[in-house]
Length: 272
Length: 125
Picture (cartoon, one colour):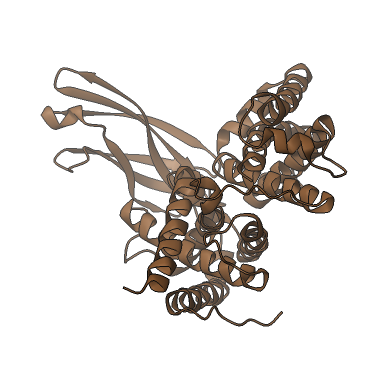
């Protein structure tokens, strides 16, 4: 096989592996399968389009092939999404969630929802699997945008499998204001510790970065607010927050889901 | 930005295949939107706990209705994974947003494996 073709195949296999590594917890989550039943088409479409946009951005900082040019980021994101859909269908079939008799409208939604986290894994493959950690210094604006994008992506990844579960509603109903305040504190401290204290990869580079939110506590607080927004968005997508939900109930769910989403966002920022 | 596909053959094939899949999924989802406008029960069964006593397994399960409509005559099957043993139980009425718990007893060596629960059928009252 010619080396160019071999390289192309390696890139696709790398992307597939990244997709599996990133999305396997989501693939195995029953509540995520149920999203295919209960989510209206326009919400699924919006989710996929947001995923496509974020995957395009991810291809700029990681991607699944090393020689991608800026004009190819969108095309690589489409490839990631399409391959993600294929992987999603195969896995849903292998797990016995869908079969040949399943209603097509249900399978389509389940596949589309799952294709997004798999596409993220595809687009993060080089960072996830350590082939090429991005070492270049980003510009100030680039560093801010990169941090915010990774906060959203990491948050969606972790939150997607937790947001549809009953546990979030249950713990938020049980928690009083003191516990909610404690969870806010834990979220902020943990996020700060993960990025700036635990000496994971890229910590020195992060301290050097320029940008509006690049001071340690500035980044921590801004990314926490973004994580809360992601948590709210996920709960809205799942239908937990709407016109019927009481504001206090919504706040409780957002704060409770905000903790894992913040951890996911911080882990996401560490990846690049 | 022009949508020019990558020049290399495998990447180009993967891109066009993916584009086709994504477009078909969008068309398929919009085409089939109508059936989901109707309110239907959404019933699922889950094993929550299993206790093994000798050659018996006691499986605790719960059945949830997350749909917009109540279900009746919900038939739950708790079975060993190989299907060699099973117990069918019926829940007379399962309103929307509710959880019904149940217990099933399975005998024999295969009951040592973790049982599975699934919905065989239900009626719309």
